[in-house]
Amino acid sequence: MNSGWHYSPEHGQICQVIETQKLWGEATCRLWIPGKDAVVRIPASKLSREREKGEFAFAARRRSIERIGLPAVRMHRLAQLEQEERVWRDELLAKKQVIPEMIPLAIVRVGRGAGNG
Image (cartoon, rainbow, N blue to C red; front, side, top):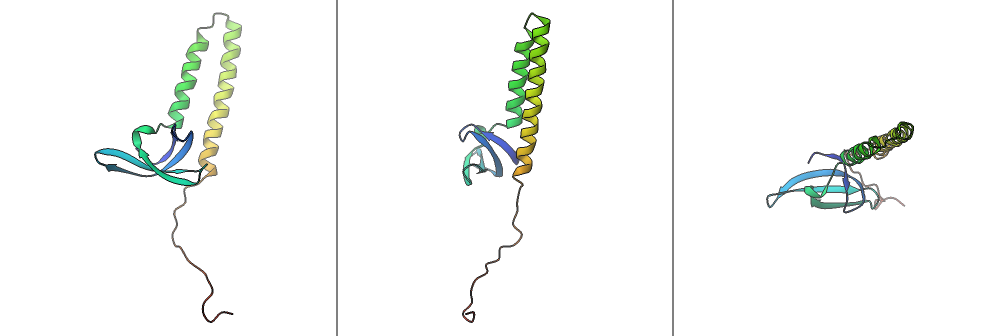
């Protein structure tokens, strides 16, 4: 499982894969869950790429709409679907930009010393 943003059905939201490793022969991932501000470990098999999930859903809806017999209705529904897909892709892109990956370079503790009043 590569790092990046994935959808966790278990948590109902997208999360960022921090680390992937093999544990007892099974790939596991450490995830950062933004909505809970928590880090958890789950089997990699429980993750799905949000993009792949969305693309599959839009493709299924498109196939369903293409079976509509009336051309005007079909074209109207396809136009609506395209608009929804554009909005979804924009939101997906915005999610990736809102929560940047941060790697601390140094951690410094500042506090009062014995000589400071």
